[in-house]
Length: 286
Image (cartoon, rainbow, N blue to C red):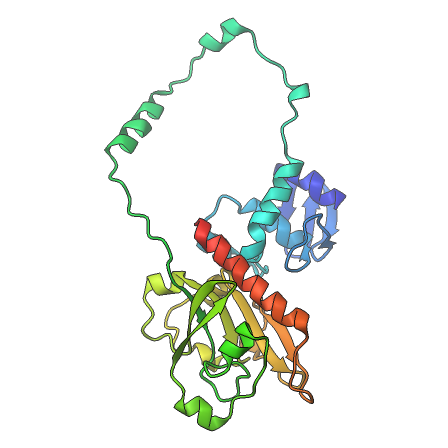
């Protein structure tokens, strides 16, 4: 933690190398876990947090591409604001150590600030942008017969904290869409995304996966890393079910169902609902 605080305050002295991190000439292992004051979704490494700080000014898409290129796991979308708040707390400005300049010196400056007036002029001439508010939130579930969560049982799962196994007849006869409600927030649930528009994708707050890569074959050119970073993703499974290697590197939360009793812990249901509503709040602020 001390290394991180020093690095935050002296970020220009930090370098991320293939095998280690250099902070002010000292070498550290990339995978050192960092335990922050803020409770985040998971424990991040020194490398992951430093890489996020170094790319803080990048857009979300640029940051995710950089993570993928450098083989570094990204900070989860729901954790970024909390992490930013803690980072900023270490960089707070101490007014007691500030030195005010002489009043006369404030009028003497050789710099040209005319560009500021150009910016203001452009803002005045700029047309008011249309703000699109998300009025319907979406959840995606698998259409696979091997999935424990489907359109057929997701309503009982999220609303009543009940896990009911779907049989083949139910799956084949059910609709590809349903509606569920969590704490007064309504969600449309889909198992087919072929007709999704770009606006539809922006309203996706949660995804249930079945552990296979086949589930995403109709997702066209969608960037899974970016989608998974901006949503709550769950793999509800029995303890003997495995996840395909193609999606193991993503930030997916495992939820294990007791196969004998066909049940989950109460805390698991509460955590799933809480994580979904957390993404809803984040997307409402965008």
